[in-house]
Image (tube, rainbow, N blue to C red; front, side, top):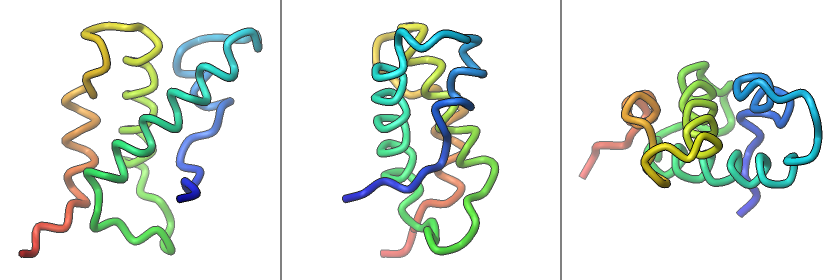
Length: 91
């Protein structure tokens, strides 16, 4: 599955306050991981429509936490809550 671009490398580097390229591949991996997790939680999100700003924020918050290495790999609660707003709760 090709991931949609929700957050760019430049946006992720801005939120983690990095202005050099030594870790670009690692940060892109964090973006991909965060995007996959957010899309898993926001399974009702229409990917053909514009991406809501809360979804981008969720991805960037998760990237920041992955980069900082705080609490291992757990997604921040704020990111999870933003993503779940777009959850498909139908049974």
